[in-house]
Image 1 (spheres, helix red, strand yellow):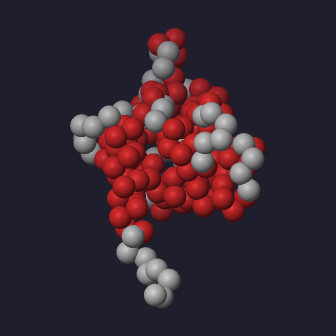
Image 2: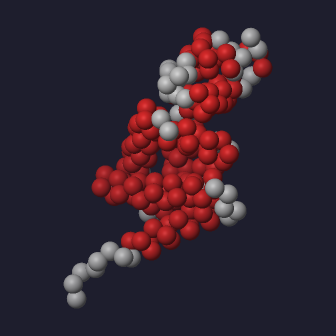
Image 3: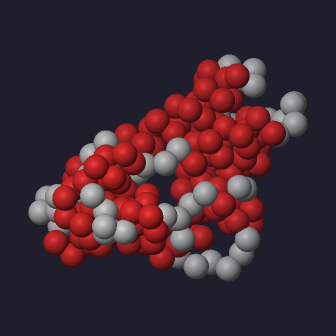
Length: 190
């Protein structure tokens, strides 16, 4: 086995993604993933708890957001804080072509969709907590997080699909889209 080659985690992720795509999530075993990556099952379990987690592992995004939130100057609004923190997100994402494959595999497999939703909820909770630590009340932090995550999802989708603007511009465009949709809300009666 070629364990000394390095990039163990990435090799396992790629192998799992290929096997899930080619033969299906349910028909893929940890042993097959490890073999396809040129590793042992023991190596697999050093990195991941189960085959589902192989596509969701890594706390880089969480760490990126927490660090980004902490770096924003005090006195910045909650949503503006998130927008500033989000600018570094592409630094920790997988390449767009890999994200497209990943999303297709997740969409085709209910256990992976469930895990994706759990991870998104956990990320929202961590983000809300980071805003609360900065002094925002919980309601403001939760609302800013919900809006921010919608903006981030839209900007990331645009980035993955190849829009050529830089990521801060995609965030700004996505925020403007959200504001345009919100403008349709009925106002107070006049």
